[in-house]
Image 1: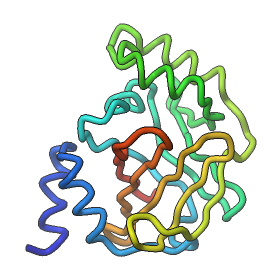
Image 2: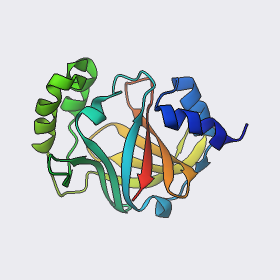
Image 3: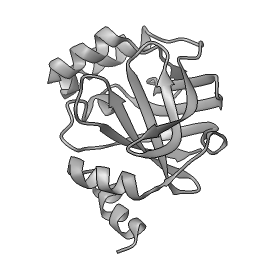
Length: 179
C-alpha cells in the first residue's frame, strides 16, 4: 500500500499507535533546511504519549522557521486569534508531563495564561540536518530544552514531525501544514 494511503486514515483520525506512527515516519522522505522555511500550522497526532492534548489545550498554533539560526518553535494563538511566540520552559514541560490535569478543559484558561506569560520575540531554536532513526533530515534543536524535532515530507506543504525528548522513551508526533 502506498505511504500516502496509509497516512490518510491516520491524519484524518488524528490517532495512531506509536509503532504505526514510527513506521510511517520512517517511510517518508527526508526534507532539507530550505524546505522548512516559513510559518507552519500544527496539529497533534495522538499516540497515547504523555503530551497528547497538551498543545491543543494551550492553544498551540505551530512553528516558524526564518533561517537556520532563527526558529520560533512554539507559536500560540491568543483569545483574539493573534499569534505570539513563546520561550519554552523545561520545568513547565516536565511538570505538564507528570500532571495530566493541565489537559483538562477546566485548566485551559490557566494553561493559556501561563503560556502568554512566556511570550518572547527571541529565537528559541535552530535548524540543522541531523540523523534520526537512521536518516538525515531537517531537525529543529531547542536552545534551552533537551528536545529535537525531526521532520519528514508528506507532500509539498505538509510534514510529519517526531519530537525526541531526552528521558522520554516514546516520541511525540505532530503534523505541520505550510501557510
